[in-house]
Image (tube, rainbow, N blue to C red; front, side, top):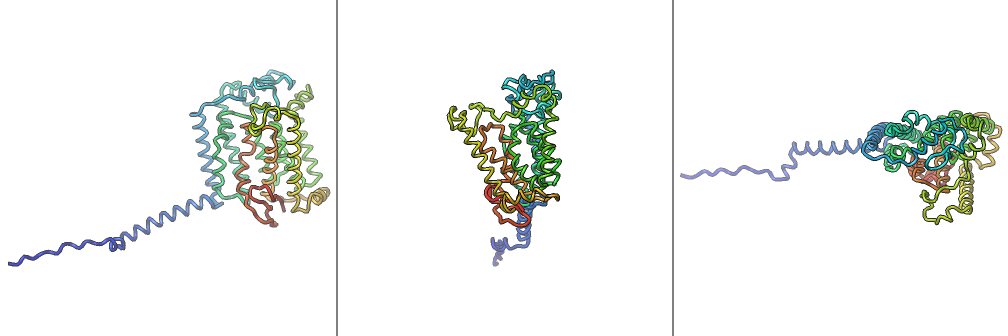
Length: 404
């Protein structure tokens, strides 16, 4: 009898397996998922419609990060105790600025600082409840970040959500706010609110906020040339002078207890333009020897450089508007407020401050909070041609800042 041999079952080759309907469906599904994920990520990163989605997530994450930092990283006392000692004298009834001092030296900040840190002293039991102070400063950090995001959102050139990530990457900025409790961030908060009011064309409110910021720390004067120029261009001479008077009156009202008793001591300490910093704390001029750093010649050279750069940039900012003389002439009889482009306002304010930073007699580590939030904006500004609706700005915001 013959033996019937069965044929072995056919094994599908790899080509036929890959072309099977089931595998094809899986491949399409995987490819579609990857494509959808990429499109979603790209939209979140680049589409201005998702600006506040990304911004909101970052604010939540930043809040949580600040809590973690406060709980896990040791607080370092640098100026907090000195602040409390300085305002302690005020709370005890002393009104002579020459006698208000702490471990780090005399009180050298205007009256707004005294009131704010007196409030913090009250809330923190004379500065002893440092943990509560840290959480208050964490709130200041998150609030400042939210305001800066609002400034960026009003820009026509820096609207992509991924730019916001770069506002949150600074380890030192977190330290300045929640681990060191410096007064610099307190001054910057009303300054950024002032800029937001400028973008909303609320110039009177901007004036009040600017003066309040200046009453906390004198570095706010670095923004003054740009602020004055923008106000003059928007409002003209008459209303600009009125707002300047308001700013001065706010300063006088806040300083009234000190001006009424020891005016010379107050003005000499709170707005000391001849102040010489300690060499051991300087960051930007560390490569100099101490003698050169402290010399009057260095101070005059820096002042000259600051003045020259301001004149050059103000000339450039007015160039697209017919020049300085044309801008000055239009402002004299101006009755109707002029709308300035948001990017023009942001560029002028941020750049004006940065010029002052570059020419500062001394920079300390905490001064990073003066300009940290402006760096992503200035770096991301593209080089564009001037149009009727946007300023003419180059990369870095440093060469062709103008306005329409």
